[in-house]
Length: 200
Length: 200
Image 1 (cartoon, rainbow over the protein chains, first blue to last red):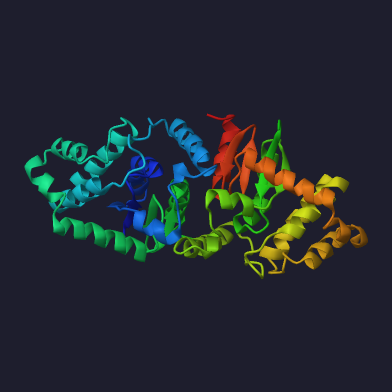
Image 2: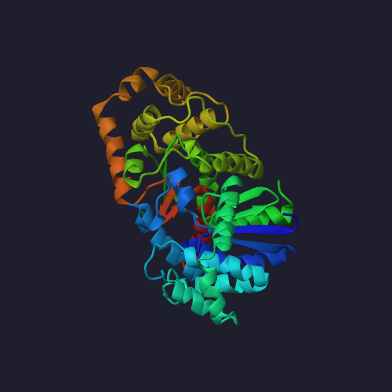
């Protein structure tokens, strides 16, 4: 999309947590807006054969070390949520339901989910946590609970995942700017440079 | 090792090609030397479940695009060698044989293997190419050919791969500075920063 960065992520990705704390500032620097797209990578991982990162021999140890190193560098708190890894079904559905009400509120909700999980070690896989965080933003908990199992919202999430895959998204975080793809938190610097130079 | 960067790589890794063209300058900037360690990642990939990058759905398309983008950015020629992907057995063995003669000559040889494959599209999996590139550096082709099947050299390579795995190496390129690991060409900037700040 013109003048916007598409930000694809899975709430169960620790690298996406760091990206979520930084993407707004990066976009603002270039006068761009950000479209947030929480997705579930499980189905895409089946096609690419990718395995849960932190459970992979050797690579998992490295990732743990690397995540702590990023946290120190960025001076951000960091922990893994309880029940990690998890499928972020409830958080994704809540996001798309909130987005129908207000785009900015949905973004605030997404940031709070990341902070609750990766700063406070709350169980963000639990629908109860998801509902609490929604209510805390002023949303009606009596409306959000049924929304989490509404067919319309389920379909909206499925469509987002399917569109992500069509656009080549296979990991998290993943950024797309005018069809140019950037995969990984460590590629945010490349994205930044790309935006400064208008490509190369 | 003190005052040195350990540079682990597989000759069949295109990202290692880019790293091989840049690592000397990075090390020099920090007054460090580089220890080059060509390895075969096949056995380690079996443990981590990693698949050949460019053959992986979605991820492979991204990597092709990303490699071309890096080449443009770094103003380096880039192609894939013929017979890609391949096991770089002959090149690895030749490297360790040459290193017994002269460490700098072995590094020149490694760079020439990368250039022959990723700039000239030669078949660097072919022992003939490996022998030609060795001879071109003034080495005796009558000695290098038997060296490629010598038990001593085979064992030296096996030891290097085994030591790499013990040190947590699971991808290419992979850098270690005083036990601090950095995986990936895109982490050379992080390594650079780490060396500037003496960690964080």
